Image (cartoon, helix red, strand yellow):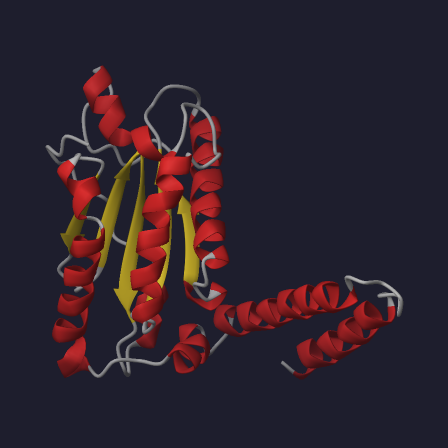
Length: 236
């Protein structure tokens, strides 16, 4: 860790020195560079012996006995904010056995076929999601991309990762702390319906946002990837 800190100090010095004194964007550039370096240090910490507990301590944890109530309140707020989307069958909100909250978003409102650019309507939805996530900040947010089986496995895996990254990027721009965000692409490997039909493929093209509580004494669990999706009859 000492080595990482030394490297960080040198990198900061070089970065700040590289910003010309008369550069009108100096402050923004310096701040962005320092933020990126700090993120790298946190990433190093999480990946080593302390894992999620380092960031978990920064975020804050919820006492085990209070988790149910904490996630109940968050689910209620999320359902209220996203009521219109649910009524249009554009997404579903599901409470998991581990008290995580999963928001499954249909690809029809999130991305065009074969693209990783967010649709404007999806940005409106993500604004609402971000509002609730910021309010309940003792959680880790996993964004998981999924595709149908059209195209090669490698292509679908790449596309699903890109989509998950775009969603996480947008949430970060809306004020969600980067330390809380994790992304993953699972391609076509977890279908919720039969890929042999158009309706099934539509269900399989989705992004899932899984909000996992940081439980006191069990912080690492919040950083573990969400469980595999199960088949469903949702008409998204």
